[in-house]
Image (tube, rainbow, N blue to C red; front, side, top):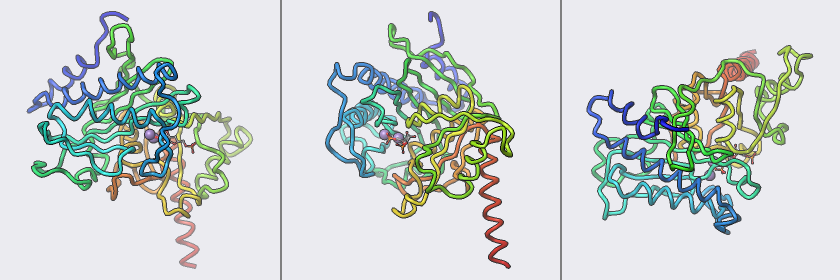
Amino acid sequence: MQNGTTITQFIIEEQRHIEDATGDFTSLLNDVVTACKVISNDVNHGALFGVLGSAESENIQGETQKKLDVISNEVFLQSNEWAGHLAAMASEEMEDVYPIPKKYPRGKYLLVFDPLDGSSNIDVNVSVGTIFSILRCPGECKAEPSADAFLQPGTEQVCAGYALYGPSTMLVLTTGHGVNGFTLDQNIGEFILTHPNMTIPADTQEFAVNASNMRFWEQPVKRYIDECLAGSDGPRSKDFNMRWIASMVAEVHRILTRGGIFMYPLDEKMKAKGLGGKLRLLYEANPMSMIIEQADGAGHTGRERILDIKPEGLHQRVPVILGSKNEVEQVVRYYQEEAEGKAKDNAA
Ligand code: AHG
Ligand code: MN
Ligand code: MN
């Protein structure tokens, strides 16, 4: 494509309407975009760059790290630490907050990210992505920020986005004024606006869930999926289709493109381990929920709106149910009905 709007131009023009904008945010986003281009190049070259396979280390979540998990994390740190826009960073791949090295100036924003999401797909050449979220550093961030600075509800996000390394590399972004998608033109090295004002239809007939966990699910999720599976013979009176890529970024991108519902619900296995869910609030659930809500969809745990959760830890996990609004609301209704049923039983 020629003469398209580049992502830099798009952001500068969007920020022009914001009073007191210093250009800091625009510049920070530029560095994030550069990091995504570098990761895209690594992912695209795969075995040619020797980046596939396991790094033989574990992250804080106890997951075996892929080489590309570690490389992408380094790329993000190096791209974003030097310019003076950030007070600190946090990532899926680091237990603690990453303070900005002393040799660089400290800025007013916080960056939190999942450098490579869906990394179990990397060795089989299936789409992976990067998820990021930008917050303001609370107070004036005079001292080095601790994890507490990051523990802000998702409603406080200044910007959320993801890069999808698929057949084409895309970057999808919101600053709270709708959702826009850009495609990387590999020839000129620029993201070009190709998907303006992305919106999600309120209704859908497509769900995404790891059905191998079905026997561990909570009753409302089981009820919802059972009804989808019953199709036109069941209470929903329509047939549903299923997809599971095991890459949340690819899943969310499909939903933004043609609607759908994605769930990684709480289950008995997680509860037994004392986990609140599978996906992480700060760098998976929150940025994706902001994008989904900005595109007219909904993001919920079944019990509360994801963006309203007051985080308690950097790597906190939450149940995730997001996508087409009417379907998410249907699941939430089943949670409410279950809670009301239990309350009645207790009263009796
Ligand atoms: P990550 O690769 O960053 O650890 O995240 C993977 C996540 C998410 O992208 C995906 O939806 C889910 O884990 C897949 O889980 P299963 O392997 O249980 O299907
Ligand atoms: Mn992830
Ligand atoms: Mn990851």
